[in-house]
Image 1 (cartoon, helix red, strand yellow):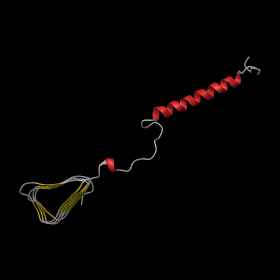
Image 2 (tube, helix red, strand yellow):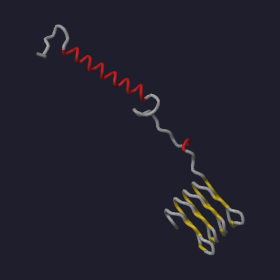
Image 3 (tube, rainbow, N blue to C red):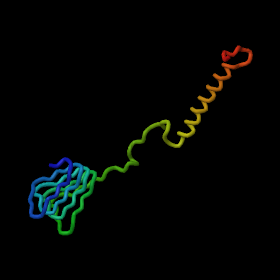
Image 4 (cartoon, rainbow, N blue to C red):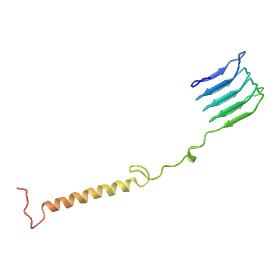
Length: 128
């Protein structure tokens, strides 16, 4: 079993089961058991006695290669099927410019009102 890194079963080499996570498995000779890859491809150029499975990857069986069991491949779901975020945070998306404009305008209006309140007619000014 290999967690990260490529597995290559070289020519004239015989192994039992092959399990690989997060990379590809290449079988150029013979595997007496099964081959399983998660997040990687399986490329068979030799023989596998039992099943070949690739989750989030694909299985390629070359010419002259033999697989004694089932060949299963399941690709990852496309990102368009992932759940979407609800809402539109400030600074993202199509409305972000309008939202920023509204916030800036509010600040300008508040500042203008505060300035008018400080120097309004009828009230003595604190400025000398």
